[in-house]
Figure (cartoon, rainbow over the protein chains, first blue to last red):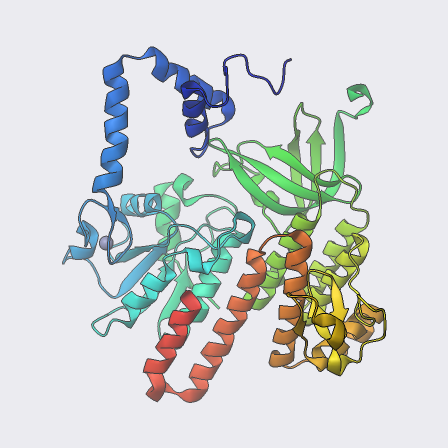
Length: 210
Length: 281
Ligand SMILES: [Zn+2]
């Protein structure tokens, strides 16, 4: 083994090294996968690379945060927030936009959403001030709000729990009932991976946060 | 000397944190009694069918079986010994537990011998979970941790002139690691006056047994002053911001604001919404 020295990377500042580095920064991409992706791009026709580059720029320019729920959307307020058939008395608070998709898929939720874009996780350097909590409070303080219940659908782990309890501490004095997904989701699991039936049941049998 | 490393070991460990590795795996950081802090790979734990995942969450004392791997050991079995359920019942306790975990993590270097650190952390988590005062648990853990790592703070004599410093005239110098007398303090930009009672209690925590320390009664206000002094000290020892320390304080502020609101009733809603704004920022 020739560890620490990569024969495929001639110099740290070469274009290929920069591409490898850029892929390596993506979630779930290790150094080996980053190299594979970079060499795939290198071998593919220029038009394909251009298409990828355009798609990257377009998504950055056309996708915005919904002013109400903070979900990613191409227009604000988003489709869910403006859908008059949805129940406006309850908001389901989730960590990530993907969790909105997972819960929508269950068909068991007709209320609104709020996306925190993360979870309180000191070991990753994330505190309450780094999340969309201020935006949630602003929504609830709006005089026209009809919201009476918040369901915190953070993942069933330490960070998710701490986030739910912290929100409960902030919101209970406002007279809002704060509930949490029922147990049944395995501890440490990710909502993203939960099957629709389990997630639907967890929503249905939610419990009040102390 | 790879041949001398046993292929499989069984050990107790406290899970400090984990991070995602690829689609379904995790790198889990463990604090073990004999090998100190180690990173290990837990495969497939992000899948909901994984049986191991729930046992490898932070704030869990586990028994693990580790198979020797090339770069990192791999967890082949994990069984919870204590998940400290009572620490999860209240946000003050839970945030304090997160702080203890982050401190233990930040102060140790990977694989460096951290003799006694596992036991210190375990004892502190047990005390927190059984409902001991959060202040005494956190402050005595900090002081013991500093002792164990060679950073014992000087709380009685001036760090510069070595004369005994009366609590009423003491200045707090987090970067230097303890107290300065008023005249020496002028030479240090980070030094600030420290509340005399807060310092006296910290001195007692440093010199007395845990049981004696636990008998000292603390108000919320005094607790906040001790906490702010010790957080500043810990920050300078680990040379970085401790997000969990800020979270401990934020959680307490939210509780105090909530209690104040309940006392004040609903007629003062506007000014208290401002308080909530401050908290979220
Ligand atoms: Zn929206």
